[in-house]
Image 1: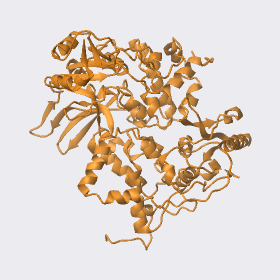
Image 2: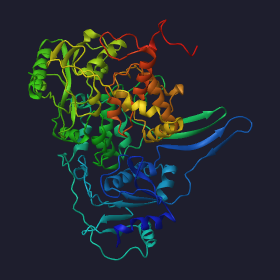
Image 3: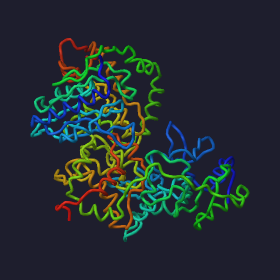
Image 4: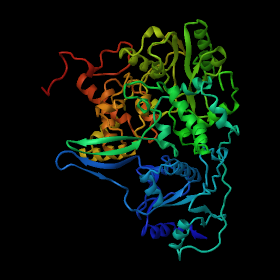
Length: 337
Length: 282
């Protein structure tokens, strides 16, 4: 199936009648996923967004319940509204990130009802990259920039560059494609030849190797330049940590959860003030270990998808791809068991 | 004759090795390469061999001085490769009593400006404080347009200004990169990390982002050394220096010519009091 590139606006308009459509929109000098409206400037191709689309399913601030104290006191849950959403045009790396978040929020006996609600309501149209940013290395992490296997609909530019080629892969996807009757025609050959800019040497069993490297001297070196900000975690499509806090006005208030960062000092600060991760060395080690080893141990896959956002945006030019190569090549000492 | 880039690089390596050879220095803080030709990263040379990895080119942009705060009570000295801005940063932290001069060995390098827009406005290409200097001092430029941008901005109406900053802070992701890169942000514990006080909410929304932006601007307002690191590191591209420049312009208007991070740096104007201070508000 395919539709003409020039019909993109029509397609989005049609979908927007029944869904809230989050598309890559350029506004306020920033490209990000936000609800589509006719006046918005959609940019399907070009480089990926700086901020990942994870906030559509896992907002950076989410009110959970409100309350009032006193005689007229109450507690009232705030639950995500019934909104059918489409995430339109997310890249394979970001789709794979959502697969990881699904594992975190929906499996291992605990279902996060807020995430589950948004996830159930969402249909995802992934879009094959047409251009790789200079920090893109998803192929080295086992992904394909042209294809997102778990998407409801996979979309690519056609070989002749005139159309967008669609493939519905799930029931949700088929339902979505049905809405586009009249705009789509059969056939169309997808162009799937985009290559990552960076190819890195990653050891096959890096996750198991890292598990033995907690005390390895590599950490002293690679963490020195870190300035301890949260940039890498907030631009990361797979960082899912949150904190819960409250906002009070007199006797009333609400509990909310918001994104947290393991790079911050208070992330592991205990009630008495002690901190088991006192410096950037312990914090960054935890971040890299989580991405490349701990997550593998628990869920059987790597949590770094190679999107390259942190590599591009790190103020100190730290580079997780460089770390992967260094750790892959590192020799284990006798302290590494 | 002025030294070439390559000459300076070799001199930096030579001075770094000399510093380490004294046995009094634990590491030399400078820059080295990354896999990207236009990104040099902060580097910490601890051995003679590592000194040969130090580089000097127009992409050596990151500030080096603040890394000295990683260990406030070091057993050995830090050697810092310091350009004009880094030397001002060091003076800032010395004046704020966050560092001790005897714990530093400063390798000053005359800087010709980097691939960084803020360098076009630089008034201190020559390091102001150093133990050894590489390169011949150059005449300094007075940046006539230092406050031009602020002056233009001041002409907007309050609503227009609010609209502008609200939009900017809607982009903010609350990562604190601007704080962490800033040599004037040298508190042992930042107010924003003291969550239980309720001063700074953790949520990244319009209100909390703006509260943070305003507080940051006022906290560093009279101590900003104008290195522009805050703006460079912002992943969302907020024009943060515009706030600090506004603070500096007001301070210049109220208290006379003022620049921060000079070797004879007087008390920050907002941190001290003299009888001559303007007091129309009383």
